[in-house]
Image (cartoon, rainbow, N blue to C red; front, top):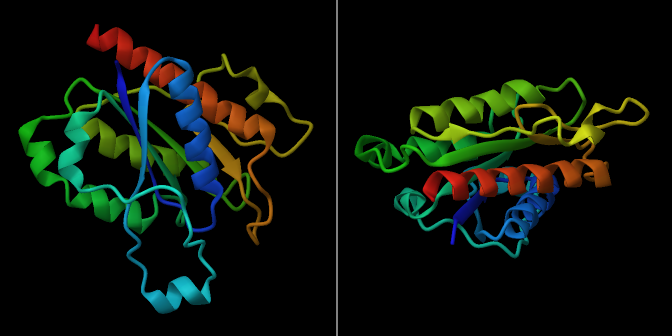
Length: 200
């Protein structure tokens, strides 16, 4: 059975919701899926002052060494000024041994993100994740236009060919829409299907 890791960081719960949807999609393709989060690196005073969401059903990842156990790795992070959050970057910065071993060569990867606004850096954030994954040797699967709902213009939408996205609003009050979550499920399914084909 194909094994998929959904690895995420979420400050306010938007990416956590997207991670659950990505996992649903991967499971619908027959994959065994683990959802893990990376550690919080912000000082406790910042976490409390910014009212980060600290309750979650998902455990922390045990360390970068477990990445090698998966056929596909799907990474979710909010944007921080047009790039991945430092919490996610810090995790990958500790994975030099995995990179050196080549343990992820030929595996499948993908990215998903959230931003405050439609033009708040969704695509550059996705590329900051994708760049890392390419360095580790992963084959990237984005959100292709088989998910046609991302092409609508009648409402605020996430979605890019590079990965599933959502728009949180400047105060974080907008939650992922049905279309955003459908995109996440679609990408998760496509990644699981691709990983199954490559490992067959």
